[in-house]
Length: 119
Picture 1: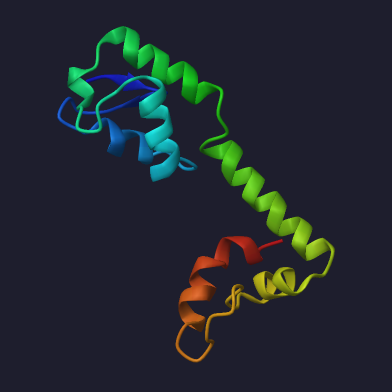
Picture 2 (picture 1 turned 90 degrees about the horizontal axis):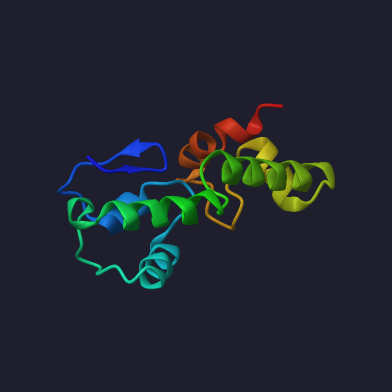
């Protein structure tokens, strides 16, 4: 089982899915990382050699992912609240922020904003 940024992944898992499992890495960033390291999109974690896994780990160490990215998003929402912007007030009330309807979507928005409303 290859160890990538302190996470074990099975040999049969695709590299693309392994990279996208980290918070802050989406499909576009994943494609650029794989292109930079010359990794085939259909490659599995077991097919990568130890040097390639080490290169991927060093690349991930230099990026803002997981807790760093979560903290950045939390700080951005806090900044919106502090300046009393429309979006900040909507976050504070647990309502949809980006113009969604409130008749049917309010429960989903409250559930998604639950973490951000505290404090």
